[in-house]
Image (cartoon, rainbow, N blue to C red; front, side, top):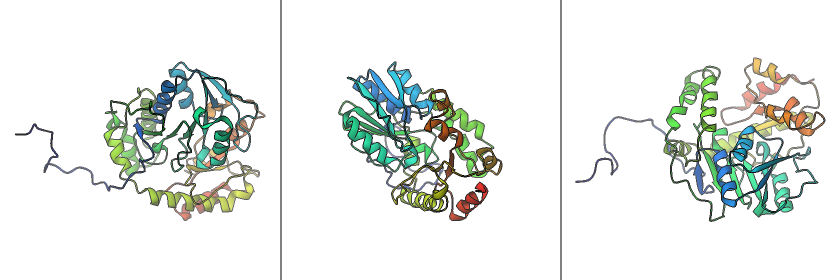
Length: 327
């Protein structure tokens, strides 16, 4: 007789019917509960004394470094998203560089060549479809691209970086806003979304939950990639000439969004939101780290980060362009 629960069950009540695809997890040897946990794992293992992070980044990265007691210093970027030309790394110092929006891989490559692969952590939280570039470690945040309650993935060839022994078991408590989004407006469960984000911030480093990993296997990645690329090309063809950002949009980008820093008068972020186009803000906290004459300040205060993901069609993109009311 076998112990109850030790074999695959047969029969019983039905669960959710989810398709199963081969998830893009082969590049992620470490599966964790969030991207901030991945950053903590890396910095802890290498014994970092100091880490340089861009002033243009979210508080989640800053909190991950501070939680470890590692010295943190900000650097600034220029309009090509390249690291401050005067920055030099000292002994036991590391630098975190970001593939912004999934569209600045060129600046990541230049940073790797400049600072060395063994000193560089690449944050691909906004670039799920970007490949590992041979850095010390690369971090992805799939929940920014897909409907997931949590999760982060990490690739590194450093043998000291290992999968956490314990998995997160609380993912089901952060599904409310995702389920609501199926049948309600995004406004209906926004408070639940914010509460879920706060709960993730308060978690210790854990492995990815079984629920999140199974949900990742239900995503048609190639369809999502194709939709994002189609939508971003559509936006870039119509808005590129009005964009101060010189973006390289190619068939592999599949970006998080289309970042528009307009060189003409357009509808504001608040006007778009009033028209129920929910444009995020990346990131208000940056304004406490930079001056008003900086590239980062301009991007935070004037940038419009336009949705272009797999939920939307060309008709949606056409409506979005019309709502911008470019003058």
